[in-house]
Image (cartoon, rainbow, N blue to C red; front, side, top):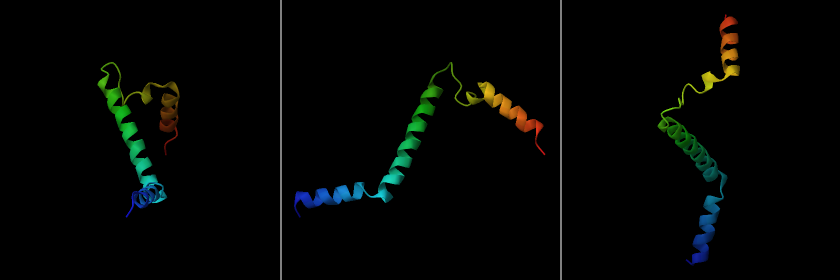
Length: 69
């Protein structure tokens, strides 16, 4: 086989949606994980408590607690 044939097979594989979708999901997951880990590396920040510090989240939690069954 020539190089062109290998190149076409390579492009067909990388361009196929059944290969692209899982790779994009893995890429997004890795990006989120890296950002989360970097946030943990800063001693002055709390990665898990960040959302609870926001006022609108506190209001949502209070609303949920008041309106639970």
